[in-house]
Length: 67
Image 1 (cartoon, rainbow, N blue to C red):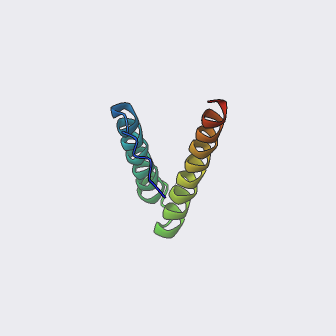
Image 2 (image 1 turned 30 degrees about the vertical axis):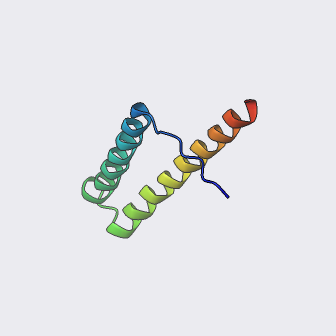
Image 3 (image 1 turned 90 degrees about the vertical axis):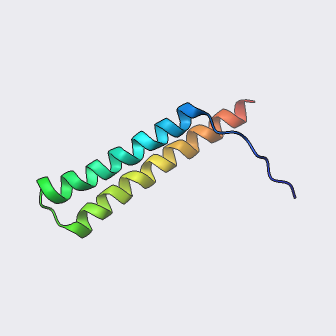
């Protein structure tokens, strides 16, 4: 079994970094501004992150199936 090693583009890394910063900001906003509690803020941020991962997975699957 071989592993396909593809190089990740700079735009992809920048995009993922911006998403991570946005998710952390979303967590801080919910926790400190809306005062909804630490656990609720973590859950909301984690749910948003999983939804984004699902969208990324679906887009990747559609792109690979077209090749």
